[in-house]
Image (cartoon, rainbow, N blue to C red; front, side, top):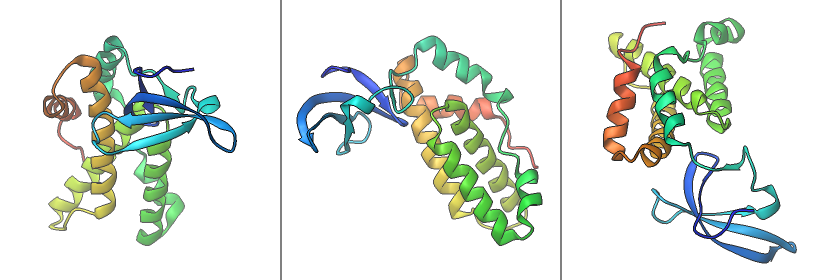
Length: 177
């Protein structure tokens, strides 16, 4: 079990274990987690459930560096495949939301990179057509970027803004699908 003071990642939130609350709810012990980069966010996790993939140690610096280097090779979500299954633009948006949601809940950082790449590609295509950015793409892009940059900046000892610049730089120009 994690101890107070330890740094952990709960889903994609980088947190410090504040304390262990014994018999907190339903006679179960809970970990009280304080998100490091979201001032007022407190999370409570059943202590017995606090193991990977739900709760895990943060990336080691070597893992963060390897992820940063691998960004160009990580594929975006296959929108063409979703389009085949959807049939209409309304259903395609629903399929995109489902794909974004599934990947955002995945413990794999590569899935966050796929979300960012896909949202960037779709945004570039919409802007080229003179349309505004879709709320769906902005929401998931910003969330994925926040989660991935927060953990990587902590692991690499880099300021968050600099980490975001580095991730964006590794993404390169968004390619049309």
